Image (tube, rainbow, N blue to C red):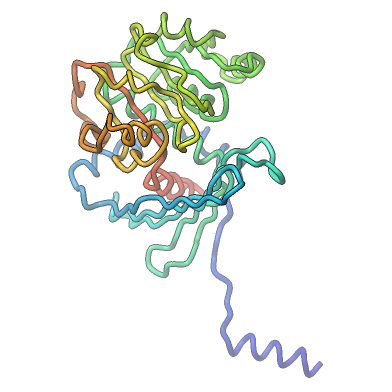
Length: 330
């Protein structure tokens, strides 16, 4: 009893109190976002409008990426502070791994946690699983770019890649922008048929990439391809192309020929450090000045008479917004 008493006394002496923290599971995140798509997209849009008028509102260092020899995938650390957006000071950091090895966790490419930090005391007040969160915010920024780069009413829309990002893209396009029909292509045709069932009443047409290129005005790519799927010869009448799958140097969705005659749009010029844009930069085909940032065009009329090429590799500010939104909902 004496030893137990000493341990209790020392614990009290050291004042080792617990810190209040909520955990958001994949299922919880998915449910909250699916029930609040319009509210989040409104929040995201207001944020970019606010950021456009106050460039100092965001502190976002470049994401840090770590690899290990002999292992596929990488570890990324993505910090961000948003200063006084709608009265809130938002601090967050995401520690995310690309799980290409899949030894312990299978069928889940994005693993790790996003941390929402208390604005005054700096303890972690929210811990978020990252797979659904990352997929949703990737789809959300792509839809936002689509809305603010050209008139979307009446556009025929195609999605290549029927996985998590493709699903969330379809949900946001239908719920937020009123897209009623989509052409969807995937190497796994069974997945397209599953999407058709769970996206009802949205009309999903199983398709192929060549068919989408010939029939659609807007194309959303969200694949894990390692070589380009799309080039200028196949662009046809496609006026808006979104590529979100090539977020690492071993991945690629677009051929450099697509740079010709298109406005290159991204949510951050920092994205030039990854994927297709990094490759084009290394080949002397692209520099940061050629990239138009989304916050520079938000709320304006069509940014150019040219077709738009939107490329996203993900930024910490998107994660911070989603985490804060979810925390406030809960």
